[in-house]
Image (cartoon, rainbow, N blue to C red; front, side):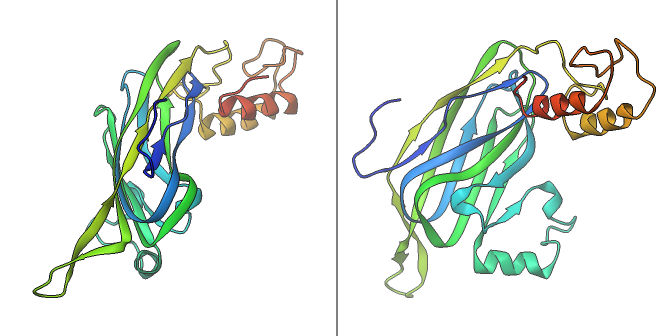
Length: 238
């Protein structure tokens, strides 16, 4: 990672990794934040390695904001209920706009009172569709200071906010090979909670040595294999 602008806020991607056919949440981090009232973030990746799920959640510094993913809004474009409107009014919102083949996840953050310090501002969820390959995690960021409004001298209206200098620090995602236990019981190409449900149901069936789900190779499908499955779901295998 290179040197940043002195006094600038840093927005960074840590290097990350995950197994083929799993889902991963990748954080976008900031440091040196001061009265950040709005951010526009573009996270660029290789769509042959990672496939966005359309889910972007809040981070440490944005935990109170309303998350606007596809299922948050109704068909007419209004918020789903009055409590959502109140959350935006009281705190702010985080929204994303992306497609599976675009190679870019676009995120907009509005924080009514501004946030300060260091921590994560967003958690971007991807499905890992590549194996034994890498993807760049490149950032383009604009940020604005809620404490420095731009006022129209004629009308007295606030027309915007002064920008904050930002140093983006890029990262790399490594898609690792499967260890042979893909756990993709539903055969949908991904290891997720659907496969955990399948595993738990399968646990109570008649299972013998060599049965699907016998990860511990002890001749039985039992709770030891469920533990293995849950650990494997998050990208780390014993």
